[in-house]
Length: 387
Image (cartoon, rainbow, N blue to C red; front, side, top):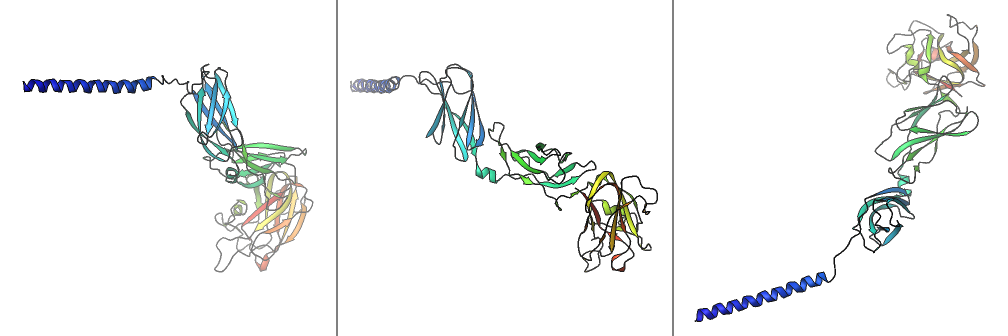
């Protein structure tokens, strides 16, 4: 009997517990069902952000007609702007102005006609400004030459294409006096501009595009092209050929060709037994107004304590002509005297300016006597300039 009473008691307790549990579950479900089912609007199908100067541009793609408003949040949802779609599909654009220069995390939310919101579409973007511009570097213009046709040859340095650099621009005055702008792609190491006005210099700048959707281009300040001697362009040596010279010590380290190869660390050394005069003649490959000649002393194979080789000519006479010279390049017939110049006994370039230069096709550098009583001529390099 006692066992039966225990069984009845336990069954009663279990029924009470079950009833209490059911009551709690019903209360929990009633609480949530009372709020109703949450309805979400459709999310944007795609979002793109383009950088700009203190602004960004959005392009939001919606392929349904069940979205009334696109809302864009930023600054932890403290700021927002709306794009009204009027329940149409397509690509919707919006520019957000007056943004501080920094990176942003944007939340893009669609809202339907019933006020239902979509889950957020997160995307980052950046507004740029003075800090970005201050870090931009102008592509380096290594040098400017003149070619045989009178065109100007711009030689460019390489550029780090991992940056936002896209291309360069060259602005110049053409032969008709008009300001002209030319685009230079990054792949172009040499730019030839045939119509730069004589005596003028181009200027150049580099253009940065932060991303494919950027709404603003960013420009480095224009920088003027630089010449060692204002108004004088060095002639492109690859256009010019040596057509004759007095003699050379050997065909290697002392060859005459070394005086016009663009290498300032080798030399032309005449024969030890050959006295002055020494000379070298050039074909400029086209009629060119030669405005300046520079002769560089050699720095090759110097004795202890020497800073340069002083076996330069004492004087130099420059000759020019437009017609083809005869076999005897030392003859004066047909050659026009462009000027006679003294070489200074100093360490460095000897440069000779030709007043009122007239076009010549052939040029001869003629040295009648040596500096410091030397019989040999030793020259590191010769440069020829034009206007």
